[in-house]
Image 1: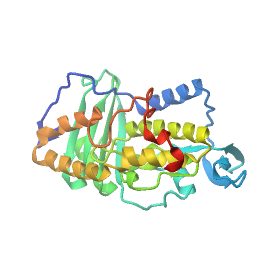
Image 2: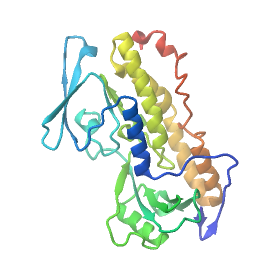
Image 3: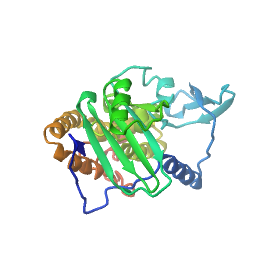
Image 4: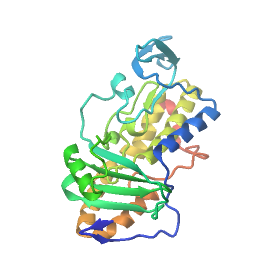
Length: 309
């Protein structure tokens, strides 16, 4: 981390994570899903969601999805998990979110390719940005570097900060921006058998802006909720709301206050920022806590009497 050009370093004794290009990461996830039986459909954007009742009993209802550029393809499903990110359509079409509503931050980044090996492979750098209410970062892979800026204020200010920190590496092209909807734990996350996970549910860590960990965490919760819904013949919404409240909403007020305190501390004592980021990467801060997917919730009281919840 650098403030006033003075560097502060944190060297972890254990591995905190892996540095990988997002495109390769997404490809690996897709290939893994297909190896487990998923059917991958590409270039078929979601256009509409309609709910059809197969009987008067709510859990027997199903969804009709219209996909494709002209909405000429139909998918029928009893359970629907919205994992299409903060800019996806599932939450909007389901009526769980309104377009353009809610406080959110913005992030932008660019991957810089190099022809030679990067000297700082595996090194993460962070730069506090008080005027943006956020920070900047730089992650290095073998022959590439991910450089970005995130914060609560305007995109023009973030672009200006990016050019200043990284010496105008954008080459006058338009940078990709994306929303950071960190207030998701305070909003509705499910309706019937339609569940939102990850950035689609607004599960962005409010201090760092990181969202992948909670994407996987909420995915595990959603799968468990669907399994129990099928077993008990109830709507998955009941169980998922219970999990969502317990693991995301319950301590979110403290999480927001803690994020503000961490940010203030990083400005007053900039040497503390690397250690704070390391704690977040170890999932030991706020609502980022580990889940063992092999034993998840088998002793949770929700399974004892789901009908009463």
